[in-house]
Length: 261
Figure 1: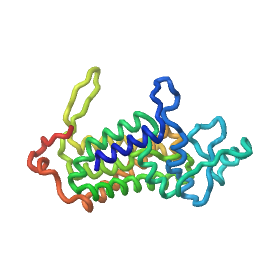
Figure 2: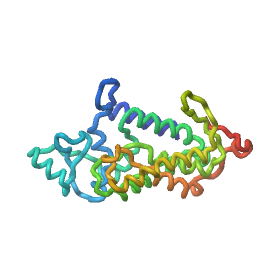
Figure 3: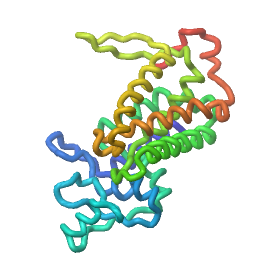
Figure 4: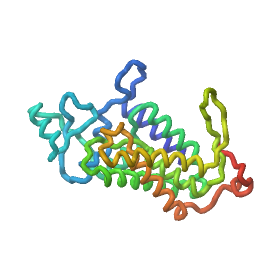
């Protein structure tokens, strides 16, 4: 199932989002699928509100929704602004999990999923794992939307669901060793216990999340939904024991040297 999820993400990115293969291109992906299938918090918290593409001079992927100043500006700037054709708002929470904003976004997300996902999947089987993954993404999106309910910036990416996998991994395999590349004047590799590695990761999400409270709109904070990461991770911590049925036999029998590469 982990491999299938990775394949679906790359299929959507390569064939539905139209990524650019040019290093000189200023835009990595087509913005229209992002506004159509990304999860717009304002649209989810204000059912029935229509959205249009933003006015000239604003980011191309920024929609403008009814009842907002940006929407009124769009109506003034263009008599007939282009409307966004989206599926029902609740469905965009799921479609957004399989979309990404650029090459680095999808590569790092899928790398994390490949490293940690297969071990978590082994603990619960394919069907339970698929449910755990999707529910983690739902919890992540709900957390970000709760913090920024009026944001008109589309949420996209698998990182919230993957954060749920990381939270589950932290409880299942805390002594697992993760081979990590460290850059200090030159590159060397060290094996770091999973609990320490994931503890550092979640701490690095928490710090900017606190800063994001002052301006909750993801678009104004570099485009990273830190609260989605926190929400997904907490979901994984809270519910992993309801889904996991076993741990890897090699982990249980190998002591603290169980490696993950």
